[in-house]
Image (cartoon, rainbow, N blue to C red):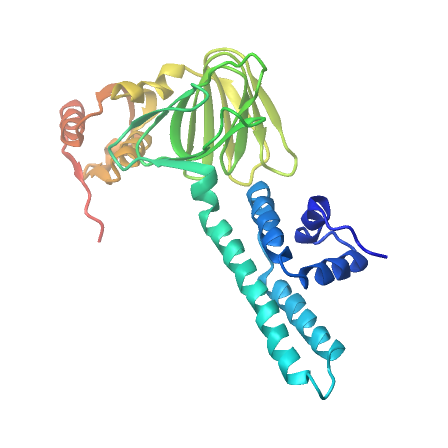
Length: 323
């Protein structure tokens, strides 16, 4: 019985789902001239549609080495053994080499082909307009990965670390928009919210609309944020989602080059400054670290911030030198 070789069968073969009988049919089909080109054309298409596939290179080589050995045995007679061996080796190792080039090329180029990657340095912010017309503002020391065709995908998904403010566009077809961090995912339709993912803690603050926050823990806790100022927090490896009401401006004024605090412990203020500038700052008067700070600091020059803190507390604040 001849096996009909078509696209569907070859895709199953590439995925490792074809039967031994089908595998034998494909191997016989590959022996005929002209079929290798078709084989690799379909392989390239399969790689594009299965970009998350991670190839098992050892299993691949074992499989093709087995095919080589079987073919030698099948044609092993005194008259043509040496010629057959050379031809079979050339054919199958050539296929193996070409297959691996395609796979390695697909894996290495996968992120570049499928995603756009954005990042900011310390002391830098960046505004991005996505293809679906959503707007993202990246705070300092932040990275964002976005599908190149986000406007055409079934669901809109991005991945981030650091801090970013999202203004998500609404779509008539109600496509969801998801933001992923190590600790949680935020799911929305159209809204404005801030996500901070630093120090093994992720915080979400709603400015407008509604969002669903889903913990990445095994328990998969869920919290709905439905009013401006609703807050959700997930700490690393802790399944519970902490929710409360906050002044949302405390978490969003960084976009205006200002840092706003309300009864914030001074060490937390200094950590916020370090997160933005990548520089540890502090004072020799460690008693001050027991105090809290309320107010707004300009955030376009570290020296101005240090001078403002020095004036407020009557003690010198400066960059710390790591030993």
